[in-house]
Length: 84
Image 1 (cartoon, rainbow, N blue to C red):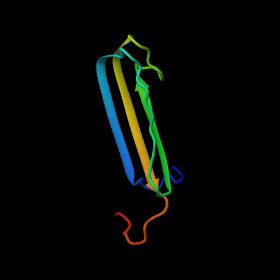
Image 2 (image 1 turned 135 degrees about the vertical axis):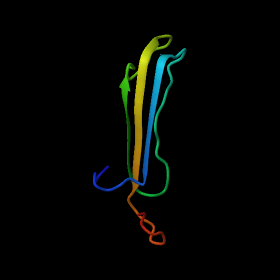
Image 3 (image 1 turned 180 degrees about the vertical axis):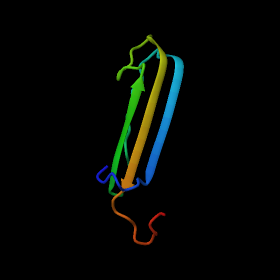
Image 4 (image 1 turned 30 degrees about the vertical axis):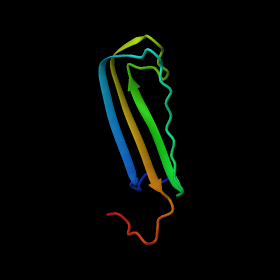
């Protein structure tokens, strides 16, 4: 995000924990931002007990993933009031 003092328009946070986690087939994942407005966005995760790329048929124990998505619209619409 370009200005850390500006509140994002979207601020999504999720936490997932598991005692055991096993993938028969390692998933492919990605985050894409769509839309016609100009925006400043970022996303990321912090993993505990999981590598960045998981392997097929490996059991991971005591795992946790903290995930966030933040986005701020850069071109405000003049007909809509600012939030707050």
